[in-house]
Length: 441
Image (cartoon, rainbow, N blue to C red; front, top):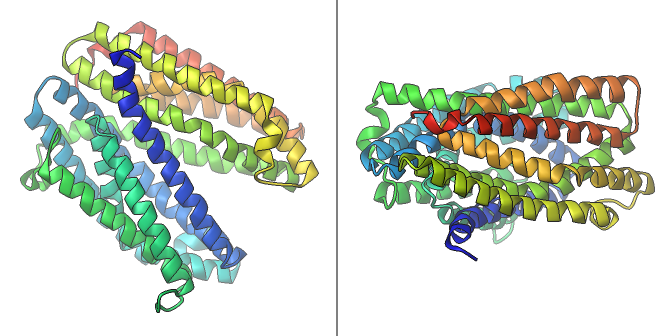
């Protein structure tokens, strides 16, 4: 293996493993919730969707600042990169306080929007209010982790993910079920365990950032702002936040349209999505790698070298995700059997996964080239591509063929393949134009 591939894998693999750790933590948390009953599961789904959707939107501050940090680290302008990182953390703390206050005092109104049963609403309010107290630290953790990844230090967020998830699993088990002499706190214990573990992760992350290695934040620069730099951070981050809002709205609308096919079809779709999510992990890791490498190499004023790194990253991602596609095509039944034994749901989900195998190389292209554009400072193009593909292709076709004509659920996945195909073509066209090489950040 040559040095370039080693460099790419050194950044990408920890990011991929970090995502895997978080996914496993979520699965174990769902198992714990299941032992408390269906009302708790529903409450967690509702309150978690409310709070973390908002957090993920503003996590864009860290992702947007990554382009600035990577570019100026590559140019060896360390002071400016550190100032940008400090400003992003400061903005995150302020926004986190505002979100926390809104979540705590508006919990009843937010939950009421979903018109759920009284017991589900009561539990959701408890969980949402409790978690809202920790939002400033939770958002700071997410932004700090994004900054470390942007500096190429993906190993640190991975290790912190292990810490937070192990701590969360242990504390949640003790506090939810009343072990080791603690009272049985139920859903309040679930939220408390999550706050404590994520807050610990935040403090470790901030300690590493304040101590500094490749990137160092300064307390002085947290709130004493260079408003031109703040404007640039918001300019780069806003499209990423808007993209997350678009994805969230799409998930809600698509679920509503597909639910019209009935319980078996909807359950099969959800199972297929769960299986497919495993294939996203390598794409996520390599997208982070290419974002970092693109920004740093352009900062060194070496666009030709950046192209070399981009194509090497894309080649590795295509190998891995195409291999996942082969697995989806050849053994969908084995994968579906992990989730259901219902014959109708099993058959539907297997069909969806077979079709989903065709998406894998397309997703690889989109994630890597989209990461390239973001690393270069073009955060607007991926957002516009997502918006156009969702509102002009995916949602209209789902509405017509699935909601109105009641086509088989597998056709929803045909539509998704078409969506990813068009996205990959457009993003490659933008990349080939080459304007990303001359963007100033």
